[in-house]
Image (cartoon, rainbow, N blue to C red; front, side):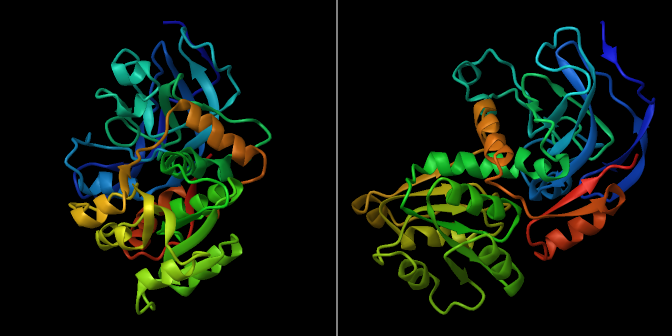
Length: 355
């Protein structure tokens, strides 16, 4: 295999979960080698997503590789590429996303639904991800990041941004209509508010706590409904819509089950509920009569395809999206997971890799 490459070390620093449930071990591991259709990216920054915690804890009934290097919002520089790669040159800025690769041959891949590929490789889940200094991914699934775009701020867009942008598209909500974003003060929610606003959609932010309220108001949300203080959340969400009939769409980003059961009560007739958050062992439930006679749609939305990624990054490159984030060194990841479990993170943490 011919690989064009820069000077690349043999070993690198990484956060490794050696078994289900952790703990994380900060140690040196070998730098991976790219295959013929892969790029090797020197990761400069990696966002931290709730999915990364779910992966380490084994919360989902999907096999996880162990030992595992988590992470799937990696932004950096291409330092090596396989002989079959044409879409990247050495020195290009690139992003490694949740979908690390897919088969390209199944019905879903042929229809650009590659996230639904049964043999998709998942960064930080079925293959090692971006909580390391160097990561590999299939070039066709890596994102080209314009060089004028700051890599630290772009990192959260690679999963959180693309995921909520896809969810808004799936909801069919149109300019002038209203969307309720549940979990609006988290990493995904902070971006969902901005994408909705950039698309001309009115936002009702639903979350808990004054810190998250302040952030949502700073992002321009019209109404913040605090579920920890509201005596009637359903009535409060409906009252926040111009005609009192409820939200045209609901984007569920919560990490607990109750909001998924509540959404049918405040979405308007012919409205759409989009489930994106993944609370462990949770179920969607809705009254059949209410769902049928009000013609409510309930859908799941799972990351985005390659074109969704291009569009989501373009919103960011044009200055329409600013991801609220805090920088932290790679070695601080265990502390960030602790804060995440306690629900104390407003916005997103982005890890900075050691030089």
